[in-house]
Image (cartoon, rainbow, N blue to C red; front, side, top):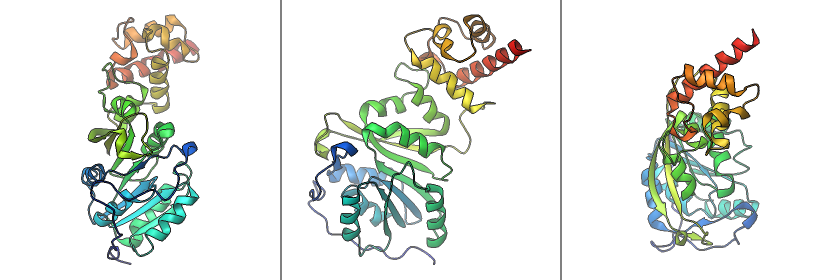
Length: 298
């Protein structure tokens, strides 16, 4: 099959609020349905999709964002965990030939396979991921998407503003955390739009923000052992108020003396904290720690 079939429109609600709730949001699944048309428009525009784009949507809810994505994208494949919503969505988008609803958990579905088959069948040239993420599993979803071999150009995601602030922060700044380094290692991050609690039903107790993560062709820094690099960063932030000399003792096999040697070898003062290090400094430190461990084993 060639290009995606012509899109079929779905009836809309008012332009200020999108749709109305037909399914009671499930608290256990962290469901807060996006209902603000202005935020929805900003997400679609900010995600940079075209008719050549395959969109993977995570957590479509009642389909307010799905509807707008389908108007702009070549094809939308929406992954929804809640079976009640899957039934509603399949009815709503029955006549939309470029929309597919998959019942599944985004952390468990074979996303690379779904993407490959859709790109091939519908002759599309790129894939972008868009989603309103449940707050309680935002980080696992983002890391799964960044680490999966999807070939996606970008991930545009709604999340709790506090988490978004961590992701937006520059590595080496006070707001940075372990997740900051993990995301910036693989992507450039920018803010698309902020969303207050009134933009959702039910209204959450926190504000939200939409970020777009443009995936890099190559990691931001070069490391010899990626797993150890992130173990070093994680250890540094486990007790972020402590100096690196103390916090890195949580790394298996390292005593203070060897950590001090590694810090000196990497040109990093022993009284610095994890949040003050750049990505390259963490790369240098991880390499020095690996060498120190190898020397001790000789």
